[in-house]
Length: 118
Image 1 (tube, one colour):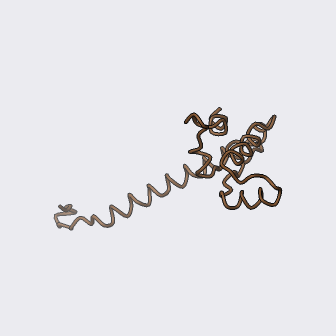
Image 2: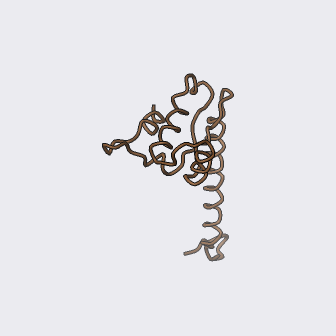
Image 3: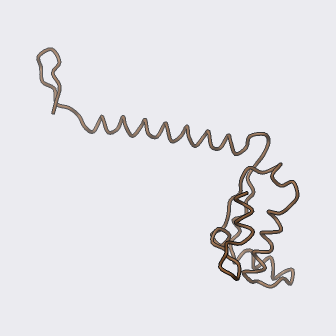
């Protein structure tokens, strides 16, 4: 495949085309990322970092004499997300894997996860 320019055949450079496409895709992705970041901090709001690992959370609990259990961590996270007026100050939260997958004793997603969806 090639092109003709003034009667001269020039080979088509797929590599250059691919590079142009990739650069354009990167610009679009970068713009989307910037728009998302701006939306997350709009109106003076921020993100709540709730991505504390189990070992780190357990260390904190141990120092305070709190049982280092799944239920205690779930209750702690639930306490945070049910804080009155929290939605006035945050636009989202960074969650730890356990929080996203957490279920209650009946196999239903925990109130923490459900509350984050509201």
